[in-house]
Amino acid sequence: MPRPIAEDAAARLRSYFEEAGYTETGLASRVSLSEFASAETRGLPRMMERTSEPSPGNALIRLFWLGLEQSREAVAKVIPEDVLTILLESGLVEAAGPAMVPQVAFWPWGKFLVATDLYSAFKMARRDLVLWPNPTTHTLWRHAIRGRSAATLDLGTGSGVIGLLAAANSDTVVASDLNPRAIEFARFNATLNGVANMETVLGDRFEPVSGRTFDLILANPPFFITPRNDFLFCQNPLELDGLCRRLVKEAPGHLNEGGYFEMLCEWAEIDGQPWQERIAEWMEATGCDMWILHAGKQVPDIYAETYILQTVPDKSQDAERFSEFMQYYRQRKLAAIHNGFIVMRRRSGGGRLRIEEMPRTDSGDLGEAILDGFAAHDLLEACAEDEKLLAMRLRPSADARLDRIYLPAEDGWHVESIRLRRESAMPFQLGLEPFVAEFFRLFDGKRTASEAIQAIAGKSDAPLEKVRSESLGMLRRFIECGFLVEA
Image (cartoon, rainbow, N blue to C red; front, side, top):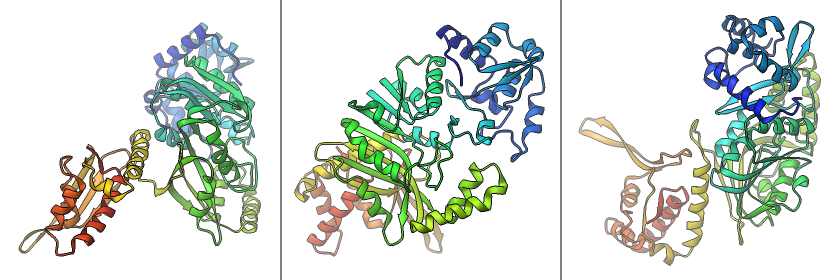
């Protein structure tokens, strides 16, 4: 583990890494940010070639990305003595005779430099491994609400990277973890990056913040559903998805009114029970509105194979581990493992449940889209009575787009399809019939919904009551997806 570092030493180290090109851009030009040099990828020769020229950046990459011990003499030729002293005194490298042996990896993320365990610690299956930022870290932060928060909790902080990111929008961030090594890394990373408003606390789940409440709780818990608990950072220690269920049940007690709990997780589908029923039980009596964004599912045998491939270095154990996993799943009648994102908002009178497929998008921050989604459902609730909806003046959201696709035909161009979509980070879309598209275009913020329905009814052969009933249903769907907002 890194040792405590003084603020001036941290500032010197941080600025030196940046000057040396140890940044996201600098690393990407020499090595791949999506892989380690390992026997599996066989990428080490290529990365060694790209970092062969003596330079400060290459020396840092070989130490803290590739995790290779270097000659102290060679390192001293390109890295200043004061920086080497800080590295040694902070336990980031250790002297072993004439060699300098790296003890941590460094990950650049935007303006931050994040210390984690080296890949070698993962290969040795170290149970209290402190993992580097990975795809789940990116997914959680993309979904994180970025509004001002008086108090934010980074639950299961690991290296502390989510807490560092959240600190910019928070008066106070509390970073908690049950792994003592994670707390040490998170504390070191806060000092290294000059983040003064991040507090670290040790303990399981919400125990270390008993009696405290937050405006925002972000969680990337150990959610993998396995029969083992080899790694603290990823394996759910309770039966099936028990940890994620418990966090959903406990989180509302630590939310302020209007506060949000956001969690990346997996959950089980049991034979004979729709998964929607299972997860709906989690939110009972929570006093929260809950939005489930379902990302996908895997059948148990593929899930087991994938997990073993990613986490068991010794291939000779594959058959034994796979058998162990499948026995565990069969005994519990596991039909599938689902994954996705859960957002809860504490609200007096809350209790709405929304379940949707997660829109496929590779870029953009989704926090604002999540707030828009809750606002849309608030609007739906406000106009639950037909008469209130009929009196409402609605307009298209700023990011709504109505696309018509035309195909050539013998007698000219024909409309092949009409699509209503949003150009937001969460790109909902609906296919529309021409008549419905014409109805949508009537909402300009000036007409009431009643007047728009009257106008479209005049172009239909159907009875007014039928048009009215179907139009109200369509309106509610437009509002739910954020295509229409109150004028």
